[in-house]
Length: 154
Image (cartoon, rainbow, N blue to C red; front, top):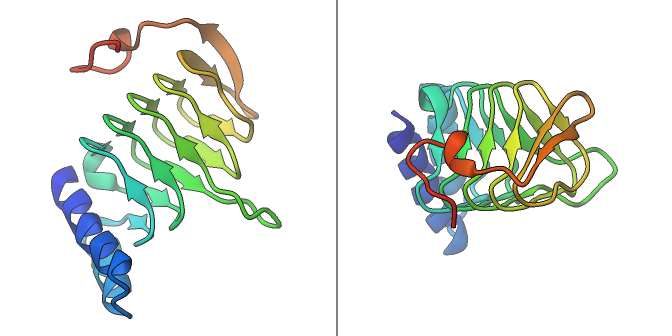
């Protein structure tokens, strides 16, 4: 199911990149109606991005950037903040757990783990675990293989 969501987004993103009017939005709306998630047509998703439970409740801002091998849980928001132009940039091999929010012009380094229901509003260094509201670093220099199945540390 997650593959279908990402495939539809990739179609919408390609159409958006080619400057096709309206059709990218229609494809994104199909994603929303059928799978219950919103990924803006301009959002850039890296290779092997996985959305838990078929992307149920996931919202990704239309200008957000998500790296390769990122796992996104259900109910996650990767979006902007009012009165700020910037949007999140997610590094490679990250895990964003269920219900987490990554908001505003923040950068998550490679191999970051965001705990369930955390609210990230500041940059996070690579190889850290963050949790809480607002999110704080609770562990540094982690081995991502313990948190992200199927991916070895780079």
